Length: 148
Image 1: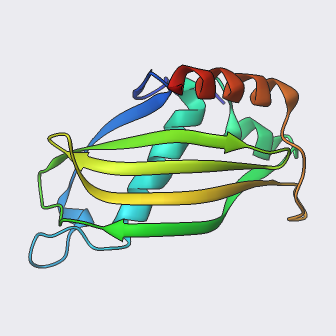
Image 2: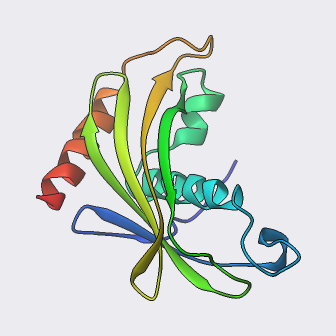
């Protein structure tokens, strides 16, 4: 399977992905449905990994494991609306052997409209915590150092 080109960019340890709100993302009042924000965050985390050079899809296909969100604290600050251009910001906060702490924000014109803080655990195919690959940990260390 051909790999997809990376989307977004890393700047100072923060990955930024620009997205547009489509009709399918909204309710009948053209306001983004609350659960769609979680979809936007997932896209941000996926592209964060891709731009960092980590092939999460290959890890799943090869039976190495996959990330699963185990905890998330969310804040809806302002509504997003049809046709808004949003930026999903993903920032790696800390890394442990089998998990990462990540902060994410969705902004419009530079102002936050949604924030989330979460833990993503790396799990083996049976769903048990597993150590993350060493080369991934080295990439994460570089990203965390860029942040500071």
